[in-house]
Length: 95
Image (cartoon, rainbow, N blue to C red):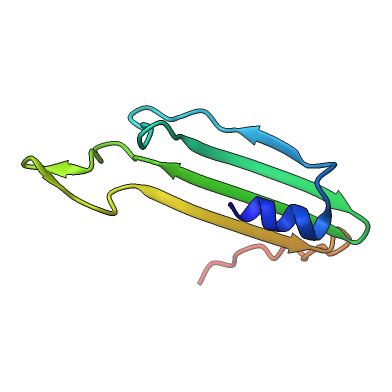
């Protein structure tokens, strides 16, 4: 998983991870259900990692008894930013 690569780069200690519970209809793929959010703050950096591996509602892996590969959620996302950066809020304007 992507988090292991980031642990090698930014260190294993200090990650705050939360396992996100399955929403209604989300199920395991085999024995695995992964839906988590991890954050770590180090000097001049905030790192956020999200991992997903599960079936979404209605995804069974089979349609009419035929196996359908790829019918699942599998994703990883990473964000790294400077915690001092604050983007100014710009209120939307009406046309």
